[in-house]
Image (cartoon, rainbow over all chains, first blue to last red; front, top):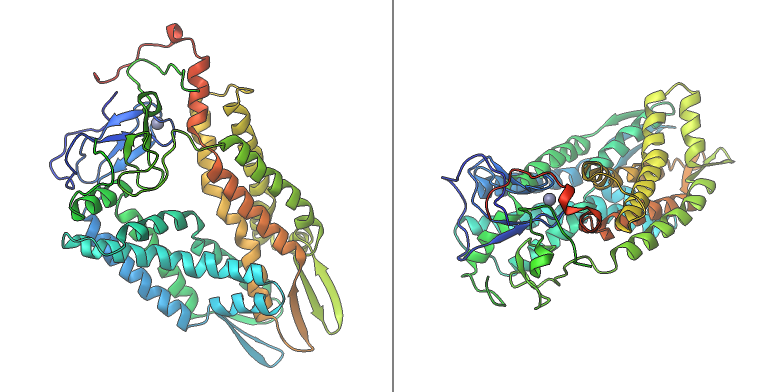
Length: 227
Length: 223
Ligand SMILES: [Zn+2]
């Protein structure tokens, strides 16, 4: 068994649950003793170099703040249009819900639901979940149902397609600009902010730290034998 | 399955009967088959990983055909009906000189799905012992499959946006085509395939085939 590759022993670290904890590389399964790392540093697998965990500075505060910022941007993105188009004497505006509803109205309900899932539900679960879990943790408390919420955050993460939708809006604008007057609306820029805030919120706290803190806040109760 | 011999100084969690929880990362002994911290199911390796990955890849590959042959969308302009496939739409951009968009569509809709499917097949072959790649190549390839997947969805979003905006009554309207649903299926199934694959199988395979005597002694901290 080996200790992870880190440069120095930790001074500042998040509280660890009692007992020796191990960390297994999710890529090669090499087992390591979980040693605390200093703020801003990461522990890497001694075999393949994959990051095991990292200590993010001011993690709870950052995840909460950027999560709230992301939720605010999300609300704005639903209030304002992404694209505004003038063609054939008509003005049409594009919103996220509008795109999903158009697909559903045009007999493509599955596509409409995918748009809703990948661009509305997933970001909401991620950003909302981070705030719901991290804000109480700031005060050393665990929100009711925090474990389920954190699980849903983990499950939804790969399906978050905010940045892909942004690219889709840009491609559409370039496509439409030949047949009509099109311009970006405030919704597009809000969605861009959502993309940036969300990336910052998710990167703000490491999974290991989040779960360690939740475990301690729940009073270290575990359902099985601790090891 | 666990008769592996990793290099000296490295112990695999599975060899100690320990499993890392896929959801919360906590390493705990198995059995019990539940994570003591978050109650998710624990496995030494993802169950049936290669077979499930191959099944998802088969579904994705089969859907590639309708995705590219059937129209992504149909434009109805002044009574004239023009269906447009992925490749057709890309060529229109290319011919009108919009090279950057043509390349974005080409990369997202054609290159990325193919790279993903081929890479995952290659990883499955390596995990089954048919190919013998170096670990460094594995790290890079696996990273690619995780990173690229979602971007293929861009064409589906473009269809949604065009359908929503271009409803100009008799002048022009856009209807989503069956190809778009098939293509969304390709993207979702390649993502599910990447999630079903367990990269630790690659290292298990590497450890069983390596001759321990030939491994260079490496600097590693004491146990
Ligand atoms: Zn590793």
